[in-house]
Image (cartoon, rainbow, N blue to C red):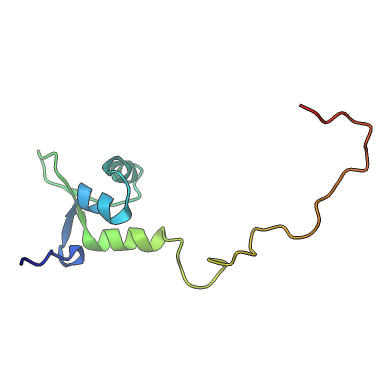
Length: 96
């Protein structure tokens, strides 16, 4: 049985491999590239675009929301607690 190659062992990744890693469609990776968010390499005269492993790691680290510490995973953050505020004006018609 052939062992599946670990993606992190490869120095250069294809656009489809990057998309699979981030679980997005290849068009999203292209958008990141065009916006200057993700560095790439392209041979002169070729349409094939490759991404260096270290650039992918840097992009992941800069754009990760799952960092330890901070408010990540704390359900109380962003939640307003307490009773709802009810207007004292009852003579206004609020129906849609």
